[in-house]
Image 1 (tube, rainbow, N blue to C red):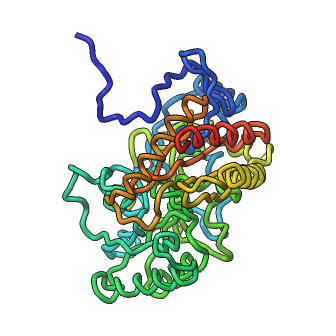
Image 2 (spheres, rainbow, N blue to C red):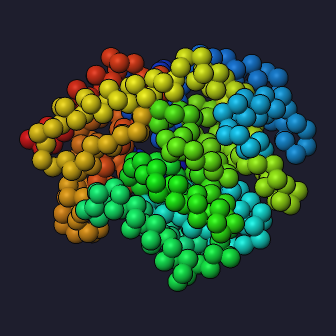
Image 3 (spheres, protein in one colour):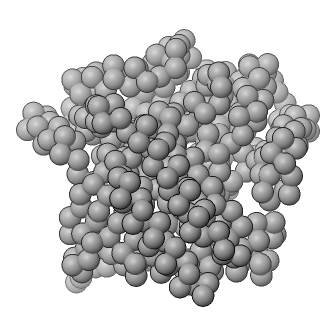
Length: 426
Ligand code: PMP
């Protein structure tokens, strides 16, 4: 008998990789693709950065799996020290898992145990993963919950200050969303039962939108006032991607209680973490968190090498500079395209949104936006450029280059994307 991959895997491109390096994927079809997907924001130092490869290879020869509740290993201790250099003052305790979803689950568990309360509030359009708690927190698209329910109870959503769709100024949208949050606490979630607020500092799969500073500050104030934890899901936005080490550092003075990180931290090796003040972490019962593979030694060694490369090669600054170059280039080359309603970006998380942003989900206008974005993403493949779509209706082309992307690669990417867009819209 032969087997095939399950059709449940929805593939964005037909590309089969032979090998990859930096910003480039070399397909078995002999073509060289400029990779503006980075494995959904994972290969931060580019594909197969020599130092990350060397660190992983060296670690493989020492020990591959040293189960962290059985014997501790050096890469995890080194990673904890290194990560600590980037954590806000007071956030000094780290727990490791394998994936973003697992870390989200761990953060929910921690918030509930640390507060003795049940409710988690997340914002609409947020994406937090596909495991049961993570899917319960997710509202980036019904496909992440479909067929999986009933989901976890004790979760409520609050509107995102979505100025574009609400047809408001950012200030008006923030006032509206904070009032809705307060309304939620007055009508559904008793603040005395609020364990935590979980939010991405830049929405990822839900639409690549930077959360307004004043909204994050408003949530911080409310979490503090009600004795709940502010949990920042930095799985996609963290480790330099937005042009600051953490996405929440775009908000002046913001100090979260818990930070969730994964993806870019190890350049492609599966490892994730939550970080919180020791006194919060200590409220989780010993042994309640953990897992067979969590904090794998090879992944941890790759993460240490990744952080060293990010620091030494100035990749956070490069993400900011190349992000500005890319945003300017897209805005210049696509200025005449009426089918585009917004071009936005924070560092190297960029989005080109198609159609009518205010169209209700499921309406013909919303479906047209999704059709255009899908067609552009496919036309990009013909231009040897890999991109992805995102957003609840799929009307957004998202651009996620490696943090090592060069000025020339940015120019090439802009040219290819503009050609693809013009081929689709005529
Ligand atoms: N949180 C955010 C913000 C994410 O972007 C993702 C993945 N796209 C996740 C959580 C889930 O991570 P994973 O796919 O590794 O489980």
